[in-house]
Picture 1 (cartoon, rainbow, N blue to C red):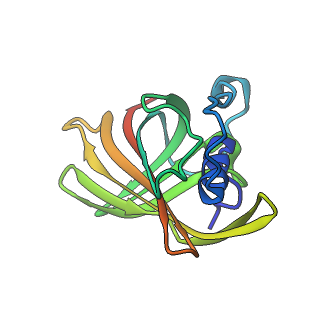
Picture 2 (picture 1 turned 45 degrees about the horizontal axis):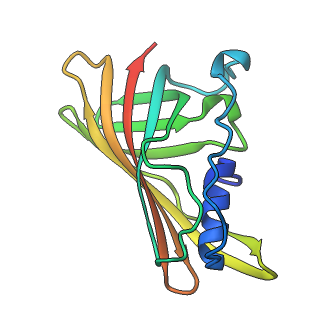
Length: 177
């Protein structure tokens, strides 16, 4: 899977969440650079879409979720969408491919879709301790009748080896370029 590195904001969210530090103060990360400033890699197949993700919730073992983006944080991405028959593939951020992007593969029934990332394992040093986890994500939503836009809900799950899980939820709004 291509989830080798993550958006710095969410990596820090997980690492601090697992540490349980109550003293960390919330800090908003710097959003990614505008996609127009970086070239669009032609080797990433699919139609290009403008995607906005809006963080709606972070849940986890309270009070361990001590750092995160504020709910309502919006981030704009360039997404590649491939549709073929009853299958769909979403890949964002195209501009960070192949090292820091999110990819979901799934199915379409009518205008509705559901897609999942492949699970991958990772770990972070945190307060002198290595925190290990398994990451997986899912997105579900629907394409508009004309196929030019979509709305969806995405959930990232970091399953910690402690048995706790951190979930980060996002709303999606996307339009074909």
